[in-house]
Length: 275
Length: 275
Image (cartoon, rainbow over all chains, first blue to last red; front, side, top):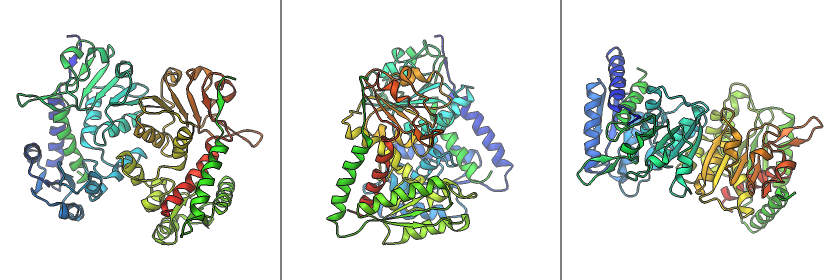
């Protein structure tokens, strides 16, 4: 093993400690409202874990639902956006049938859109204006900054073009002056592209898609994949055991992007509260 | 000369003819409102030319200003957006001091935002939802479609990352299933990237930046540059005379993207009128 595993848990812990200090010193207690429209095991687990982490940092967490029906979801998100005691609003997936991500996201005020779900937030970011990116994309950038990875003028390759990760990660990398390539399922000769990456972001949702043959010596690899394993665990899009022998550094799954995403989301809430 | 010059004037004429037919058969006359905030020679020339073209196609053109002061610009754009007799709203640059492109664009209703100036339009496009892209970026795609250029799985390289051309062109190319790389002033070894392009879009605003050494044999090159020449003419970002010997096809400047942009903008107005 020549490369290094990036310790996402430690990076998340450092960010949480900083947030806890800021919140402790603030005159206002930041408040995140999480709307959970549907009863879903994965969503429930995530919301519990997010709430616990928030409370430990002194951030109030107000959970609405489940259920919140398709007919009232947009109204509830708009009400929470208009509530002066709420600083951040998050709509948990999965959404109920009949509501699109664009409809739900558009109901969240941009100033409280801490997970970048409103299309206006995405457009503002692309225009270089101020808005919150989706927490996962922001976490990718936070990891790279925490690791001291230079981005200006470097080649960044993002595999995956989802609205919640691939595209916003590309936007953020471009804002950091990287030359950015977005690859996806229709890309011909994926390895030819990824082998040119100084920074490789895997966000495609296919377990073990990227191996040693996809990575240039010395690259930094961020694995956003969270694919369920038969034994109830998680595995990434990257074959970490192979890639760590080629790359300079790689984020493991679990313990990489995941914990940093939660901490980054809460950093957006703290920011939205003006803390 | 082994490559071919793409005839933007002919492609624009074909689109205009189609629009004129649709408008002639429609029960409603499409109406474009153009707000011209500042007295500027280039803007005045462009608005005159756009108005004339629109009128020839049976599209009403309502020009407001100049001047429209910074204090009233947002209100005027919002009023026109709320006016049922107006189908498209365009805010001509340059903007007056004190108004940002985001502020002006945000005042235009997305359904009438025929030049994709509202950040919400950009975010909707990135999310795969329906919205108008900036006319120049849409014109690049129209040219490629008109020329029968295959995009799915091909390598597209966009040089330039402006909010009005580079970024939306990248979004549109990605939606067409191309693998997309965005290069810019901080890109190291530009030619190494551009030589891998099946489709190369130059939108950087530097006269003659890209020459034969930047282009792969057989590539299709779209030159969005409109750089003024000392003799009062225009020249592109591409050294067309060299590149045409390498590329399969290249758009000239003038006579390439420019006329198609005007026709594409008017096609958005016709579409917004439901025609």
